[in-house]
Length: 368
Image 1 (tube, helix red, strand yellow):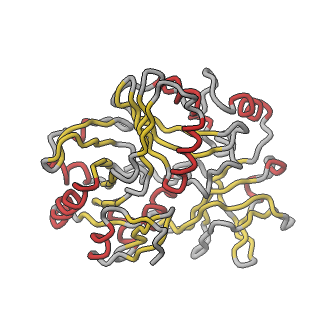
Image 2 (tube, rainbow, N blue to C red; image 1 turned 30 degrees about the vertical axis):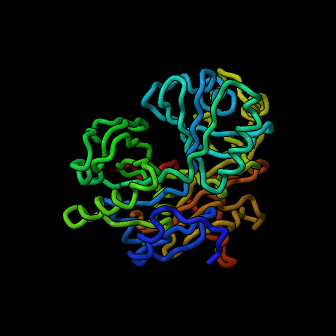
């Protein structure tokens, strides 16, 4: 065992359940328990529970916290009120994505930032370097709090009796703070990364094992299955959600990644001029989503896109077999000098054979 790899507070619980553990984003995480296919379908048909405590959790508070985050991120924070959350990007001075994140507005002067585990240290350094002695307090709570995601069409009804919050009344991308399993001041949100109905629960590490067990106890009547990161990946891909390190990086801008909708040019922010120029000129690589009709052909990260003359015109960033669609689906980029290619003349190279792809709009599935 690598002692440099961190464990979540639920590590022993995962081992007891027979999870296959792997090193992921600097943490030992469950890849799957019994079958990633069964776990995927549990989230689409009933309920799945994920330990996503590896995610970074920052607190920023102070009178100027709103303006500070407005300058550091691409989306417009003035569009949300207390009790709402917002998807956004931290970007560098060249417009590259440092990370994608969700910002929770706890109050006018307090925000919770949920960032990717692999980028915790990088994000912390970037944010601290821009504080410039402003009257702001930055706290990294990543190692003190755990995060559970309960996802699936029966998720809200299955755990409703454990909380005094009416879960079905929490709008999408909103949150409430209340009691859960007799524990006070628990933040419950509805942001989600699977495309199925669900909630996320933020709790201190010392309480998470009890809450995990309480939820699994309900499992017999609601078929709640513990789920690993393999099913989380296939679920997010069916929705076309980008993943940092795959679709997103510091070499890719939000415009290129198809995230213009969270890039608001009505405010000042780092990298704004470069992104505006890119958007105006249209000179950038193109993000695409595609499926493969040919049976048994699954695209994988790193596979190449080819044109009719077998020239490389781009690369797959993520690919998987969709258990719901029963075909291969994927995301990737077409290089900027190949923007005008006929959609019907793009192929993906799988084991030296060029397989036709069908470029489609996201999501691959409707939300459930």
